[in-house]
Every structure is written in structure tokens, then in C-alpha cells.
Length: 244
Image (cartoon, rainbow, N blue to C red):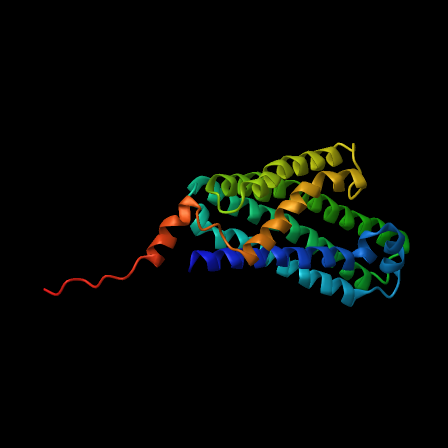
């Protein structure tokens, strides 16, 4: 595939991760928010809303893995080890997301088939499943992303000059900050989903969003050393071989 087509495909995939992850989280509110959980688990429930959120998270998983797989042929020119490491980090992140998604869907099943159980039992089991969702979100998007999308991808983009270096700095800074915020939540210094955690994730958000927009609109920088040979070969005129 043409390198610029790879760049634009990657950009679109990164944008897809935004338009799937954020709405999915909002659609899960009846389960994840304390003020709506009790009425959901013992009431009629907004099951179709939850299923729509689950569908979006499935597309999020596909887009996450695709960002790494599509970039692999380009990034391995800079560093084979780090390129494979980026794919691995993306897969691990998606495993956490998938486990969290399964826990949410299990809450739906619990509500649908737990009619004979008392409300207290449903509430305890349901809250335990929601806790699994919270922990997977913290350890996956709240920590592993900082290593994969932040440090590894930021470093590869910075060294390869595939995008402007000041942009890649956001990844190099945002990745560690995201990891730190995850650890602070883990040790109960910050609240999960609170203002403090959000502030520390802003550089990572800027990095991923700007990367998606830049690659979609402009593609890779033509002067980047690891793709310069591709660009030159396209511009060079075709010289037919001499007839024997």
C-alpha cells in the first residue's frame, strides 16, 4: 500500500477511536453511574442503549488494533522491536477493554434473568461487575495507552519525523502523565474519572486527536527519512531496460 494511503488510513482509524469510545462510555451511564444503577438493575433497563454502546466498543477494539497493524510496515523501518511492542501494547489494551465490555453485558444478563433474586443480591453482584469495568478501564485505557500510544508511538513518530516533532512531544509527555494518573487512582490519591485524572490525560488526548487529524488531512511528512526513498522512487522517471 502507498505510504500516504497508510498514513491517511491510520488517521481515520484514530478518529474512529474517538467517535466510538466517548459515545460508548456515555451510553453505559445507566450501569456505570451510581445514581442510575439501582433503577437499571431492578427495573425495565435500557438494554438497547447498552447494546449500542457495546457495538461501539467492538468497533473501538477493531480500530485500536488496526491503528497498530496498519502502521507496522512503516514503523518497523525505524525500530522493529518498538513497532512490534506498539502492536502488543494495543492488543493488551484491547484485552482490557473486551473484559470490561463483557462485564457490562453480564450486568444486562443479570438484570434480565435475575428476576427471582432479591434486590440486594442483584445490587451486590451488579456492583462487582461494574467494578471490573472500572478496573479494566483504569489499567487499559488509563495506563497501557500511556505506554503504547504515548511513549512508544510518540518516540517512533518523533525519531522518524513522520509528523512534526512538536506534535510528537505531546505523546512523549502525555504518555508518562497518563501512566502516573492511573497509578495515582490505583493508590486512591485521585478519583477515577475525576478532575485530577482528566487534567493529567489532556496531553495524551491532544496527541492522539492531533495525530488523527494531521494524518487524515496531510499524511506523513514527505521529508521523513524512512519514507523519503519511497517518495523519490515515485518521482523518478521510468527508464525502460535496454533491448538485448
